[in-house]
Length: 252
Image (tube, rainbow, N blue to C red):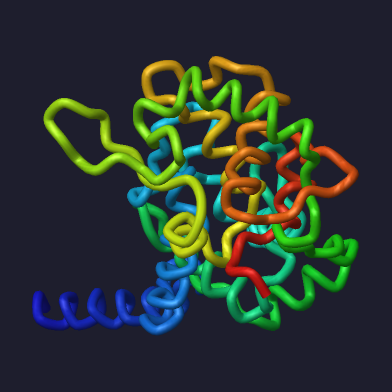
């Protein structure tokens, strides 16, 4: 009798497993690998490698119930939200990989997202805005001059007066380069919106958010000027949804 009962329980268990919803099934390994690469390059700087950001302004992705809603994730990636810049240049496959990764990492288990899921959601959204490059004249000379003044007072100690970065040293605070070739290499493919939000809410480490929104935008303008990007007629915006449409990369 005991043997029969155990067999019946095992059979019921197998039925329950076979009927489990897709959200409990995890995601394909290759999709997760692609999503992790996209996350590490574009998202980890604000959300943290473990989904737990250092700044309270960035939402935590660890054990987050908000990640259960696929439509919200796809919409936010496509058009941005609040201080998160948009990524309209991501393909449906890339959005699916990124969404699948965050939905099944950091203590989450909400299942895989397909490219067709993403295409269906994006089809109901407004088209992404026009994407520009830092080489399209996205700041003004006056703004860059203002940024130089702010930078010299708060950033030069860690990143160097010439924005070349400061190596690790017992007597100095290390900081990565913020201009020229190394900066372009580190930020290639990312957006000014991501750089703005990260800088605005985490820099300097001793006093993040110390300056006005305009001053942070001006510092970015100073960085672009020393990188060789040309000035234009319109100041760089303080809105991450707008600056998020300006991509960083080598000179065409």
